[in-house]
Length: 395
Image (cartoon, rainbow, N blue to C red; front, top):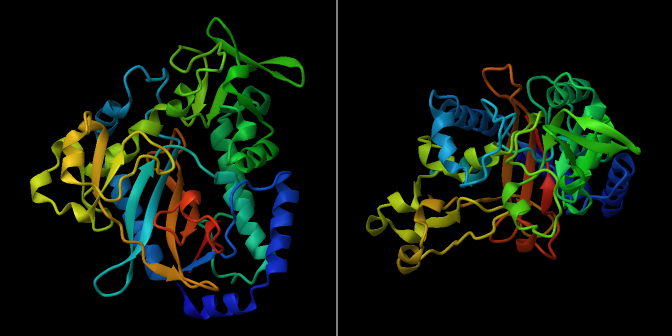
């Protein structure tokens, strides 16, 4: 995106150096990434940064309105409400496609907001990796608010632990060892001193939860949640002593309800130049819309599953549960990032942290996904290079 940085980066790119970076990441984390790490970071101009910050502020204005939490309750599927819901999400993330406006300037367009953590730990490691092996200007930063590496790690750790001892805090997932994002879990465990635990390994006694830490039965007082309820429901092979809908004495670092409450369900609420027009399917004026300009998305899906890029009127009218879908104006990602072959499209995720005592979320980091396929995601970029997980350095 910044020619005077992009051109020399590409000209001097060395595959052997890139491989050394991947080896360094594997050594530092103790595990190799299970996804493709992009061959390049993205350099983001100051005016694009300002537009992203304003776009984030537009989203936050809606999320912090009185009554938003009550409205969002309707997004929780029947029978999936988890006791102990927090007043707001601990993690807030927004994905923006990098597009072009009528003047040919880069403009972010919101793809989705979510109240669920992603790679907060890995992204900081990735930023260090690019800086270690490639020429990244010191005046460009991937973090926000002037946070140093130490500040960032301290804030993240303090917010997740929230006064509890590390041995009483767990990262909870369904078979964490098999997850594509496990490298983030491993780095979190390493930095915080917590344990990663499969939900099937939790023991329940009355209203208390326990796990075995180095063979010692240990009480769980706080859960750094990475379980996606919808995915858990598909695992009827798991034998569970504890079900998420049961009342237990734990605090939540990322309450499960917010995965549904702050999601595609929120999109129709926004009125901003950085948010494409969206409708709940049961409220959409189908006869008035040019459906070629819209994409159909199920409210309850993950990693792009069930998205229909080319919805037809007959298909939409045949959907039995239209309230569980949204129609969203298509976000036309622009091929902005020059690579060694075809240019890549970029999606920038703003990553906020919202400690329980804070009135507003704080932007702390970012994540970039590069794509040369029809959509962002592994299945659309097979066999391609200079795609996948990356990070933005902001002017």
